[in-house]
Length: 436
Image (cartoon, rainbow, N blue to C red; front, top):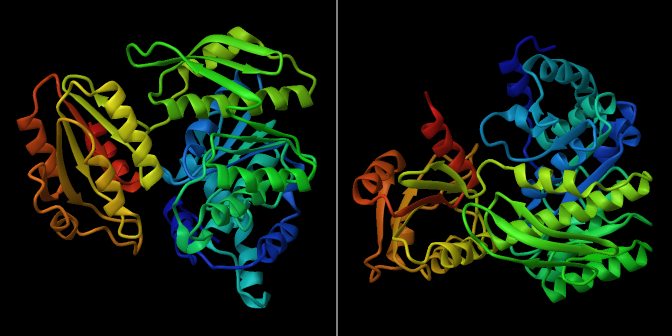
């Protein structure tokens, strides 16, 4: 039995992070012993290489505007662990977290002692706690997949709607080295006769999703096909677009998160929301939709920490996300000097990520290091810089706080300072800037 919040976190984080498995038997047994709380929850399941968190945030706000109490399950956290399990945007309290740990602990001990594969992992425990917490507290949950989909420990319930935001290269050691292999894992969240919303996927990935939806007799709604959007003028800190899905036409929708990819995330969320409302025989109110989307924010996604000079953090941590970020910089900030502070985990495609960033105009890059989560190593900035010895725009400052100070001394009021490369890195940076 744990008595304090710190003890509860120590129990959770003390578990094995990950066990590769070809099935979900252990997770299903764990939930069965806890009374199968996942069977009593109405939920939307969100998978994808990137865009999951933003899509969850848009869905949360759309559903809350209809009066639903909405649970969200996301990872990783940016400021505090409790964010991962939230209701109506408010993280679970420390005391409720302690109660949940005490609720699952005896079952974990039982599985540790008696289950052939051993007991549940850290993520399985957090997932089970989420299902227990949401069972009596929410009208609808929006559940983000951890990694992949097919064998992810969240993939143990039948959702009202499944969403696949994007498919690209990340976590290849777990998910596979080709887009069809990765797509097969993501498409694993598709359930018989449950509608599926898909973002703009590469053709080879979309074919896998289409086949999986077809074999499950699940209606598939694809961005750019059944769902269409048209991006309009881009002025100020917003994106403006038209959206159409069946008889639902929305003109001049606005979102405050920048990037064409955020228009896609908002459109995936809106499509899932419309499908959810239809299932529950509820109307879709256009003005409420417009208000909800306009106010949605998600920390760490091209988030401005300071206006003058402009300092922005972005959690882009894989090659597809860096490609989208680079496109945004070229589209919106091509007239500005752009300073980028880049720190990245060693198991990411850091060379490709930096290579993409190097195409940004008026660029100054500082490579740095930070404290990775747990035992995960961070890319050595000197080794990375050595690959681009002839590029005068790239330098190394190991201490990221010192690097921030250096950039602030060099930049002018018209320049952009972007800090990116890892969600874990920008979490530290965000705390640094937000400290009183």
